[in-house]
Length: 337
Ligand SMILES: NCc1[nH]cc(CCC(=O)O)c1CC(=O)O
Image 1 (cartoon, rainbow, N blue to C red):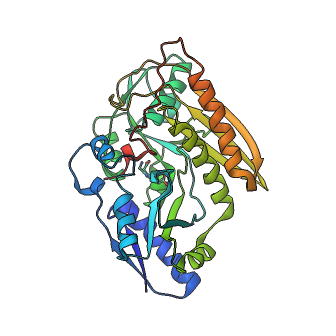
Image 2 (image 1 turned 45 degrees about the vertical axis):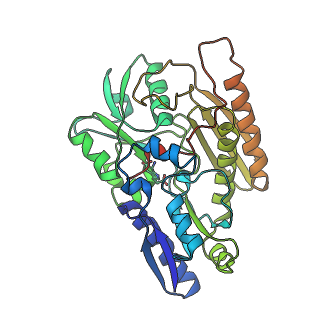
């Protein structure tokens, strides 16, 4: 019996169920889902506070990893974009299964179409500084202002807001599709414009490093093109994490044996500021790097350094940069509760 650790949310259970079924199909061995509640699920404290206490370890990730190390489960399944870039001692990323759609989507209220139909002053919900900054940027191009409203909670809760008080919400296409709610999407956003979060749409399947199960999980579930893409994206994020607190997007696509990596860094967001605050706008910096699929780390490193140079090379402007290692890891500040 392979015990598969999962968070309790509908999305987490769906994702872990997919992994468990694929493991059974590939190995012939039975699997069971074991629910682990995480601080992010149970603690009413604000996510930023939880993140600070966890000193940078994703609040949704650490409880699952503890269960893995304690031997309560044999496999832990996470959304890859919620996984911190720092390695976890005693744990390996055994498999990165084939990714779902990495793009963000806009879900608008009944009667509105897509992005182009958002009126000036539209109220758009997201808790992600990356989504907020990139959406503001794209609307600013044609002179529209959007009011970003900080929304939290699971996918259902966020979708319900477009039937209540918001004109639109931005979500990951992958999560909606996995929950069977893909038909509620109003527009799939161009990933060259609203550059997805590093690892978005991909799952992370972790095992104990010393468990022979690691090799079987890899053989059963790992998808090398997806692994190459997310390796480049996460390397880019890791480079920026050390030197800047700007919201970061990274999206790599695989074309044959080549990677095309797009990176974006938005104007620096104060980790303590409300996402909804219309922060001092600067320009979003974008870079594109190409490399072989076997040079994913190097490709991500180059792209990250170029972004960092562009962001920190603007001393003398009103833009702030920070070398303080903030609690931000990925997009965990918006993670599903
Ligand atoms: N931020 C939380 C989170 N973590 C993973 C997903 C969706 C699935 C994925 O991106 O793989 C979501 C929801 C969202 O961003 O809309």
